[in-house]
Length: 250
Image: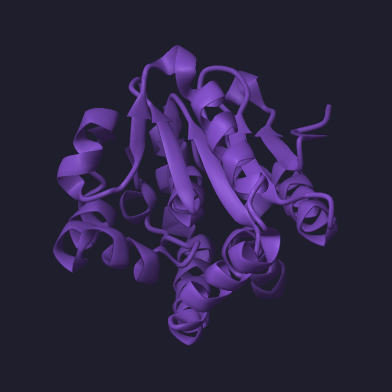
């Protein structure tokens, strides 16, 4: 089964996470297919905007704890898997195409990281989001150690990541996120309209703007992801993390 769907219309590439039976939780296949889809969109001159969403009842429920062991091998294998996670962020943030997220249901862990990686977020009013990584003995990725403090401030970012509190869409503004909150049934239409509006703009200035805004913090973003990769590697390789994942499923 294909875990990521890809469609182009009106210069917008819609990339849909497609494991609805697992709330689009991340496993190696989904991760590989997601990176490939993003690279395809970024390499296609006919694509002006990337629209990111999830099939079924959620955007992405984070790492699939039922497949935790598939993410951990030797140190080199585990590092390669983590770098693949970071490749998603590189494709979302370090390329020059605008990314619009159409987010509904759960956005957890890596899924929430990808929301934070989007340039614009349209979120359904039924959305829920949190970071479970620290409670599992692992670590966040997706450059959120840089991006999240920029978006909501260091103190709130620290609380979100460290304590793993659960939030709903109504909390987004109070936290400091500049996300558009819409009724659940309207999220994809609102996001698609925004994507088409951006896609219709002259693309040279659009690309230049994203690059200019990114370059001021690119060095620190790269450094943040290197630190995250090392910390996540230590967490994945700790046998206690695997036990915590099993306990969470019990």
